[in-house]
Length: 122
Image (cartoon, rainbow, N blue to C red; front, side, top):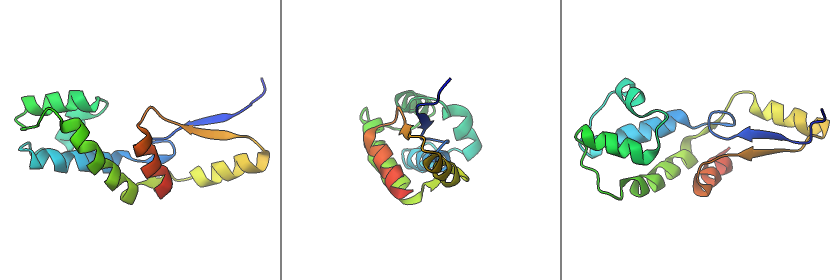
């Protein structure tokens, strides 16, 4: 088998976005009337789509408008663009791929604006 290209997922592979995302969500929901510990937030929302997280937050007492997911994204992307960090060892792996002549790309099912914010930062 010949390697033609190496593909990397972005979140938690190239960039450490989880901490910033979770803290942003925690703070946003607290402003909306749902105060949670980080542990509670993680158990309720990790791995869920933002719309599903919003539905769960409403059941927990948050007063979220129907537009909440779309309202939250700009706040999140701004913070990611200021705080996100590259995963330890990634620059060395990318340098090794460059030296070996292997092309690579970063992939994600995240929104373009999110990817631009994070990848511009790192």
